[in-house]
Amino acid sequence: MTSLPPCPKCSSAYVYEDGASYVCPECGHEWPQVEAAEEAKVVKDAVGNLLQDGDTVTVIKDLKLKGSSLVVKVGTKVRNIRLVDGDHDIDCKVDGIGQMGLKSEFVKKA
Image 1 (cartoon, rainbow, N blue to C red):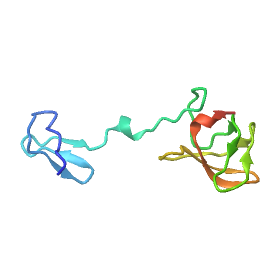
Image 2: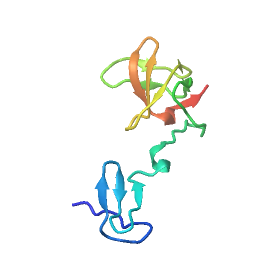
Image 3: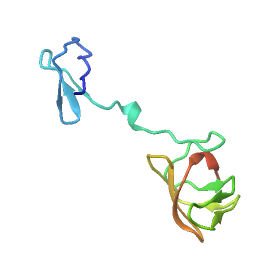
Image 4: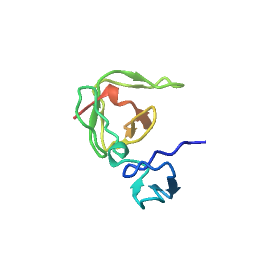
């Protein structure tokens, strides 16, 4: 069983969940389960530039594709990236190869 956090106002232990919020029945205080700062994931490229959806990036290392003889060459420009959660930070479509996932550590913002 997951332990719920105490109320930040009155420190009551009788907190319960109500949808996406926590509610304290003693003082009536409500607060979100996920803080706004935790929701926004920050993705940076190999040199520290902040990446956003729709950016254009350049590949900085030859990337071999698993299960294929194809290689994404250094200098390949990838347009209109989409940031996602998971092991690979970027979903994109590479010309001549197709849809794939890239790690942000192997690209730089163009």
